[in-house]
Length: 264
Image (cartoon, rainbow, N blue to C red; front, side):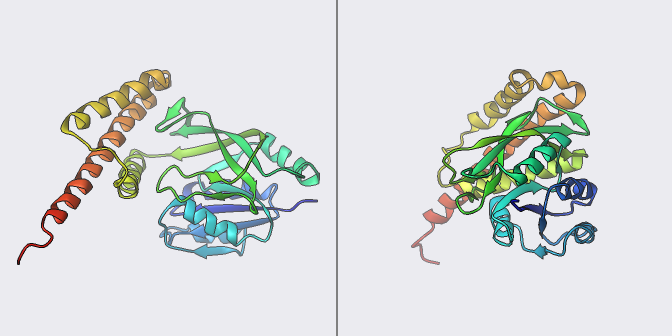
């Protein structure tokens, strides 16, 4: 029988963590939690399920997941966020794979359904819903890249499909939604400022409008009623913040560079 470790990264995750770890415990032989100094009772909940709870300052999601993977005792790892949980069909498939079927495999792709205020939605910028992701893999060949945002596992040559759906209870309040937009756009700007194209005043006006129309109409958020409209405006806000922060960083860099060599 193949043993499976589950990796979970947390920060102030008390609202969703118990459900996440209850789902993981149905198939996991080991659970590893890496927390970023939560101020709620996240760590206490985690310790109800495992004694392998570590504290580490958060920089990027991929770095945090790799840290968790390195602390696993088993080579097959299932990486899960603290607001995700597997449905029963996925759990059943994982239990079957433990009995046999992982030979010569490197990674499994799975289906993930996003929820917003407990409602399934068609899109959650910047992904359509459901989306597909790699989260179950052999750690000898696969690891997360270190992208500032939207990281993913890399290194596998091929993948199989995992049955069922990973349910993502992403957001439960507007405060949480807009806090996420602020944090993620800051990481994006800091991580990609050197490679990003020049931001103009015209692009600051047009790109958010384009994002709203793309995600509200073409990505079908309009089918999600009131919540879909909120997510359409979120796409516009996220896009605006991303570009204006890139503009500020580039302008700040240009100003510092122009002052080099001047007498004080």
